Length: 350
Image 1 (spheres, rainbow, N blue to C red):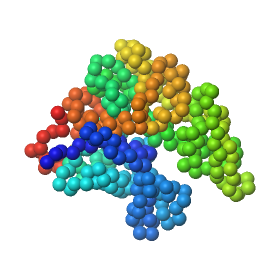
Image 2 (spheres, one colour):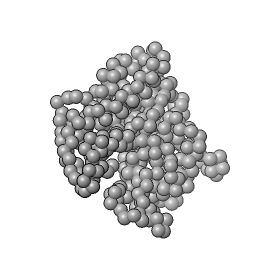
Image 3 (spheres, helix red, strand yellow):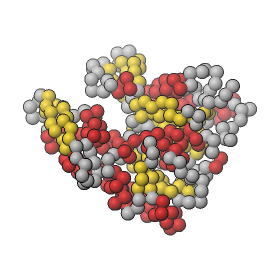
Image 4 (cartoon, rainbow, N blue to C red):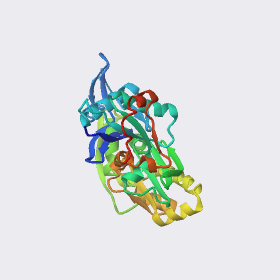
């Protein structure tokens, strides 16, 4: 029987699953909806996301991952179980699964990820650091004796790493990413216009209107929400120039963290980065003008990877065939008892 290997980007905003043979095979929001009267999960992914802000009181919409860490074990298990079964419907062939995790994840947090994946029917579990997976998925040969720097901006966290010869040399992470931009924009609209907007509207402003740099780009979006002054539904036009302040504040925090990593990078690797620039990956990196803002703040060229949303998932799947060549950032996390049950099976490295 053909072995199935899959890579999972277990993100705060989205769960993306990839295989080396087929590429991206699933991309769904990391959201579930629960009927609190019965405790049953009634929807996950896109269906649950559409219920946000619109569901009756007895339906709770849950985001079980926060800052790249599991906050709700049961819902995370349910999401992984349903999505893995959708990708690998056969019960006879248990997949080998690589899961990306934040570089600064703790042992307890890693154990929660492994438990969720194993209980979903995985044969074995491997953990891959997000920046390492992002670099691989973007096509960077991280095994070469050359330094590269990756800033992976997801939904809940940003991971920054300098990588050389298959391992992390310097790394940092911070809980500022796509969702933080949404929250900051929503707070700004509330403070300036006394208008309360939901997360979906805030995300629309980020994607369609916001820009980190003062360029010729200018857009406008009419947002609808609840007026604090009139206590009634209201609408308001929001322009690009209105959002410079909130998005630049958070972009500055990412730049400061990246600067700290660069300052701690050995001189030869720093020279490599000066020549090759910095690579941006992750869905949060697609914020308009962010690459230009970071380039100006760090005085280094910054480029957005092709299809940045999918880099981590692709790299996670690819890591299963190159695990022996990764000096750090890849490890077998399969519980010993479970591993012994498959001791006669070949390892997932070609």
